[in-house]
Image (cartoon, rainbow, N blue to C red; front, side, top):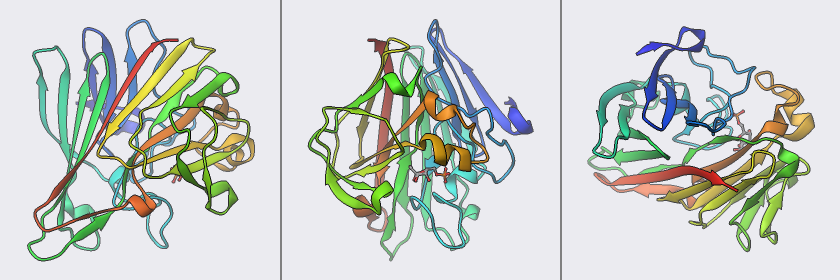
Length: 279
Ligand code: TA6
């Protein structure tokens, strides 16, 4: 355990093939990089590293709601809560596996849920978010999402493949329902789309870095694609005006109509595997 940016407690992981950093606030993976490659995750140079303030970049854990909520933190409280590191091991494949839990006290409504997060660092970065309904009587309904910010060489020469034919809600056009027609999505303006009922892997093709990033998932029915573009970037105080050119969010979770309801004692597992290869 060490002091990360802003003095926030952080764990640094070094394997034979990669490095990673995870801040205990939000169990927030803020860095992942394979040896000899550019960082996989984007982290804003303007991000605040202050207790209770969401870190801008990396992999925010979104729970128990996605998006804005009156009188409550945007995207839920999991990403601004301090998680406990309860386990660390190196497996036979040389991967480092860390396990975190979010203390229930973070929930002002009285928690009847358990939240575990397992981060596996190796050639790939693997994440698992496990939600358990600990109530004996009541169902538990929630949204969850791993809101991953990917680093790209230049958004103007980046394409996102894997969502062709999928219906989505376009938040830029008042949540209008549309269907994706592009086999490879190009970002040429603000993009904020919630793709629904999709379990497909997504590929980020980065011509500038000559790299593709593959986002594989299970236990997720929604994929969100977001780039703030020029005007929205200027409005974000923890995001550089030009940084929209070096990032894209491809987020894996269960959002909107894909929310999850667990019966008493049930658990759900959201898994994401991130890997890169030469393009
Ligand atoms: O996932 C896309 C989104 O919901 C956008 O609408 C934008 O608000 C983004 O998340 C960032 O949200 P945040 O609360 O982290 O500023």
